[in-house]
Image 1 (cartoon, rainbow, N blue to C red):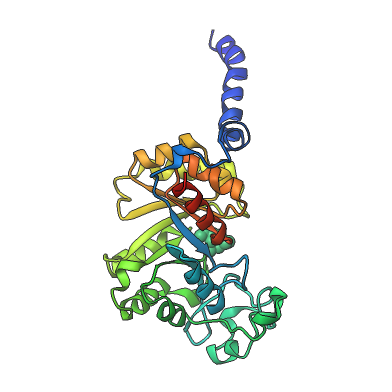
Image 2 (tube, rainbow, N blue to C red):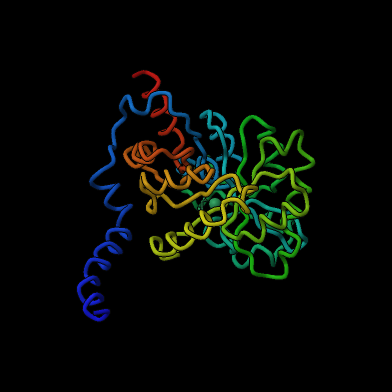
Length: 301
Ligand code: G3P
Ligand code: CA
């Protein structure tokens, strides 16, 4: 009886598992509208510049941050790392090679050495030649509460990053009303927990799924884990998933457990509008100007 039951039920189980795995793809391609319509009217969402306005200026530079401010974004996302002399700099990769004219690991160089590098030429626009890798403090001083700042702590499995969350908080504390407009996010819950233990005033968001992960399955497991511990995690204000992993149903479930949902990084207008129809609270994008236009289109409906 049990054998027969397994034999007959397994195709159905496999069918449901497959649908569940491809649910975001199905929603994005067949269910969700990619055009602005009245259903979006009155829906609040935050516009978040990914690495500054990184589609139009070299990422994580003061130029990209200033451009994002000029566009009128609600929040600017940046990535931080530690130099050899334990200064916090704003740069995405563990190495200098992709976004500067230097080479090697960021944490093998002092701040003074990193400041000699050109972080703008690689972008291919003459007006950004000579841009520098900024320190976290330089970025925060420039923003100065004009919008929110989302600081991403990357996975830093290296003794050099011991106490890194605590060091970040010390920089946040130096800014006027820093806790109101500066938020930490990380894929590594350990950093967020360490930050809370150091100072519980800090706001945190849990980042979910890097581009190098196996998105759908990993997302499924991770979401289950966090939805399951929603009560314990109530210091975590948001789950920030990669946009290919989302569906209307998944956003609904996260909301039902009290999490906000900030998704990254749809860069076409169509994908951004689809995310808005799915009900996300914010979109982290390289092209915040497109999202500003979408917001105006919605207001003018
Ligand atoms: O804010 C989320 C997003 O920035 C994570 O991806 O690789 O661009 O840092 P990544
Ligand atoms: Ca990031």
